[in-house]
Image (cartoon, rainbow, N blue to C red):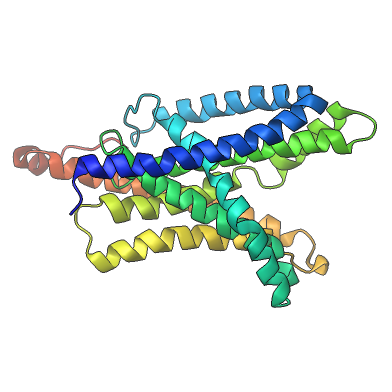
Length: 290
């Protein structure tokens, strides 16, 4: 068995270089955009900071929250930077595979869903292993997953916004605002939904005190697989004759999945609180706040 100190060291030895590599790649991309359309980066940075602040504050008001200092920034950094290295390594090969087998409708699904969800799920596991002091409860994987997904969603939207500014021949501002509008209306929060589902499974697999080994494997792989399947279906090129109904159906279902994960986490928290209470308190049946 690996001791706790070695576990933390090895987790950080994997996290830091991958985040650094992703930061280098994103820095080149953002620098190129910034030279041509600096307004788009300024706008994206301000909106991203505001969204992070609102989400962080809202989560801190939940009974699931435990003060973790600035460590949520590590989860945001993994989502925004570290996860992108997996796209560079695997994205093109997955597109090639889809083309080779004649499954053109799944090109975007395989090129996006596979590397992105593998990367985000691995990061959630590594962060939980690296930071056992602030995050050591089964539902902490859900919290980490939300921050990882948020980081990915925001950096992706910043880059899409800058690309939209360049694509508009008449006005950078019009192109920028249109792209942010599209991202805000057509599927907001998707990466948060995906990573929350993956994170709850990974967190329970690593941190639940009473699961059997088969149950840990089932949850640890099942959560990321569910996230991959959700992402795969969203990116899939459905027949145009179907119109917008796939999106209209999937987004509410994915939101429901996040809500379901949150409710499961709250139930786990109540059970944990109940088990920690003295027998005399439990016998009196005192209520646990929700």
